[in-house]
Image 1: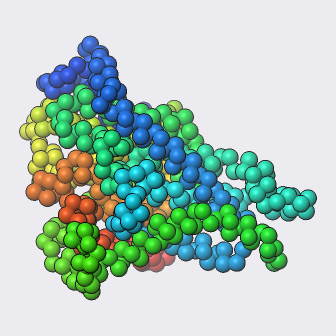
Image 2: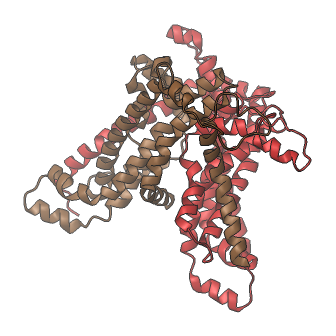
Image 3: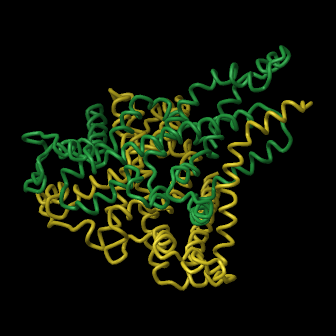
Length: 268
Length: 298
């Protein structure tokens, strides 16, 4: 009895969580106008890919998709490199003021990013970086949270391993590249998933920095599209699927790493 | 401990790229923002910096005298006060249910419950707008079967914020759920065994064993979620554009409008710092509250 109750409750719960996403796919396959009828249809009677064709053709979301993908890949590569180097340095290399600098970084975590947003925009404007790829990438190139994740993980690397390599005459870079990096693989994947999702889903900063429609990322382009096409629910749903599908697939494939990162981040 | 010169040189070289990026593009702007909030930086100063004038605390006085600021703060507080408990309750309920030994297909269910977290906010906001459509939305259609008249969810100032709260709770509860699952796994198993022998029912077990044991996690989650929810922006931007009747203008929405729409960057910076102070104060308040509660319990 209790078994049925608990299972039923949980399935209903999960069903409600996933329902909007399933429904999004269904509506995106309906011919134009058929979602705006009563009763609201749940399943497409004659499925069509016409909206996907329209959106992925010229003038649709194709450009924005390429922009988003490119930005997400580059920002992931940059932030993983920078954060990994710094996180390892804070975890394993001895230098003066190490703890003080790290403490400062952790203290800065409480400052919401929006406080820096307006002056950063003015700075980038002064540097001629508004409406450039560099301008969008800059805030995501390195992050305190990422450094923190790597540091937590890298502390598990045994010191004896590093000392032995030093006695053998290996340089610090070679030690990092040949010995440390392979052991950090899991946290690198975690970091990469976070960075990719963060970049792909980011809305406010690209909205501010990229004024040229040709350079819009998917979320910004989708928001603009939804203001123009308020009535075309089927088309908008196809746009939502195109935006959400890549990150959902990535998440399902790498969810173990993602959730691990979430947990490591919560033991501050 | 001997610190070799070579090692410390390498250490700085490794940390430098990240530290330079953070100092230059986060540290400097934070201080610049503070300075900016004390000036009348606007569209004229943007054109010619010679028009810039020192304002002292005037922007802060101005912000605090703006009716729209208080409306935005009220809306944001409404979102936080209702949204945070709702999100946390959903997270905890899902985590507790997933912990049950009676449940099968756990990984599948967990993935389904977590999926909304990784979705793109703008895209899922589009879905919600149609689900809550006054005429063709599934929500009103379903409610109609229970005799409820159609509600203009996003067009009625009484319902716009509750709808956004529901949206945020749906989108975010999975994140805290994962943290709660880990916390629940750390609760010693024999505590539950002992309670069961004493005849404690499920609810009593939850109340007297689960909650006290995960209290530190609960506090941390409450603080992080509260701080995050105070930064409400994208939801109203995409779903309601702050309307109807400014019922979903948040503090950050006001900052965005003042800063990037009207180019009142000095005033907008003051709004940002006021929000920052509020977030810090509320977080501190939660910590003090928790100390007092546990202090009484002991």
